[in-house]
Length: 203
Image (tube, rainbow, N blue to C red; front, top):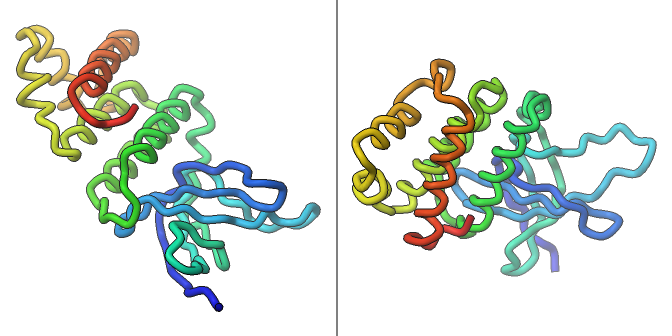
C-alpha cells in the first residue's frame, strides 16, 4: 500500500542516529505539534544537505498507516542557526529547552504560542547575550502557557526583594540585563524546583 504524503514545516529539536542508514528527527511544527521523521543519511562523498539541530525546515513526509512518524521524501532548509555553536552556554540552554518541549508537548496538537516562544529564545541565544536570562524567561513563559499559575502562585509567594529581582529578569530586554549570570542561575534553579514539585511539567 502506497503511503500518503504530508507536508510539514518546523524547527528541528533533536537529531539522533537511527541505525546505520537514518537520522531520527524530532520537529516542532507550529500547527502539528511534535513530529518525528526518518531522514536517510546521504551516501559518503556526496554533497547532500543534512539538517542540523534548530534548523527551520520544510519537509514532505511519506506516512504509512496511523504511525506517528514518516520518512522524509523532500527536505528544504529555510534557516540555519550556526551562531548557536559559538557559545557553549547558549547551545546547552537551547538544547535543555528543546528537551523540555519534547518531553511535554503532545503530538498532532497546535502549539503556535510555544513555537513562537522557541523562535524568540533561539534568536536571542544566537546573539549570545545573557543566555541564562533567556532561558529563565522561556521556562517561566512555558509554564504559564501550560496553564499553571506561575505568576499568582510561585511569584506571588516570593519576598518583595525577590519579586523585584525576578521582575527585573522578566521585564528587562535581554541586551540591557545587568544581573550576574550566577544570580540568574539561582532563580532558574528555584523556578525548576517549583515546576518539579507543583506541576506536571517534565524537566
